Structures are given as C-alpha cells and as structure tokens.
Image (cartoon, rainbow, N blue to C red; front, side, top):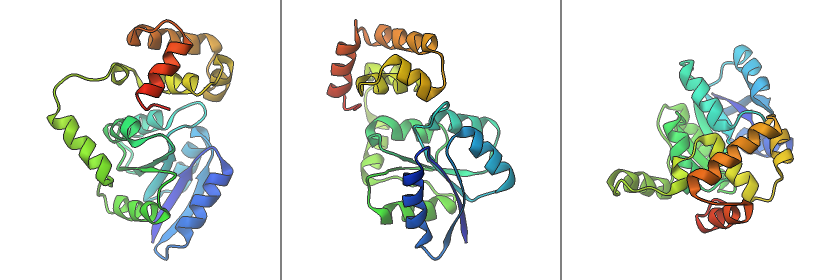
Length: 209
C-alpha cells in the first residue's frame, strides 16, 4: 500500500485529491496539511511514501519546502501538484528535488499514475515536460530574463501580475509589506521594467499568468 500525505492550503482541493487517490486500491491517504507548519508536524508522526505538494502555499512556497526537505536529507518523495503552467515551474521543481510535476487541471488518472511512479522512486514527467528538459539541455545558453529570478521573486511577479496588491501578497506569504516591496523592486530591476503595468504585460507575454 502506497502511503500518501497531501499538502495544499485549500481544503476542497485536498478533499478532491484525497477522494481521487482513495479510489485506487493500492493508495492510502494517511494525512493532510494546509501549510508548512502542519506538514512538518505531520511528517514527524506519519511517515509516508509520497508527499503530494502544492507549489503555492501560504508562508513558504512549495519550492521552499522542497529545498528544505532536500537540505535535511529527507527520504520522502515529493510529487508537486500545481495550477501553474509546466513550462514555468516544472523544471524548477525537479531541480529542487521533486520526483514529478502534475497540473491540477490534468486527467485524474495521470495523478494516480504519477503517485505510483514516484512511490517506486522513479521520476514522473509528462511528454511536454520531457520535451522541455531535452530542449533545456540542447538549447543555447541564452535564457529569458525571468529565469534569473529567485523562486520567491518569481512568485511575487506572478502574484502581482495576477492583480494582487502588495498587502495581499504580504498576508498570503506571511511576510511584511516592506519585504514584498523589496522583492518587487528586485523583479523590476532584473527585468528592466518600471511599474506594475509593465510587469503584468511581461508576465502575460511570457505565459507566466
């Protein structure tokens, strides 16, 4: 039996994923967490085979959690489940230690197949993701400007471009508004932009939102 822990800050989404996985005879969801704090407590008491992790968590992003687990030498295998497009986050997630990346809007059978593959210690990639990985190995060294952003800067960029105010972003990420302003300033500087309108246009043109 594959033991799974879910970490997503939306209870309804967790319920949907839990119900989907519970239909599989070889998968058991043994715990759920809504944020990083709950997840740490849960992993101490409920060892699991696979952690299904949302990339957009309050306080610490899924990428932060991946990096922390990697630094701690955790044996848990992580499958990232996200609404963000594969071409912007999948490779980042895999580099941070994820075993796979699946879009929440994908086929439910794909998520079940991904959990099974990750539980075996194998990487799960979709055909599109495999193509991106090949291209990233064979493409010239040039990269898009936003690829030089840190994970937190990219997260800030996406949230601003989605229409969220700095105060909303600060609350969602449990950061001070001043800290979020610093991230925004860094993003504008690195991308050579002047204001939020230009930032939003950039994000749309590059498929970030």
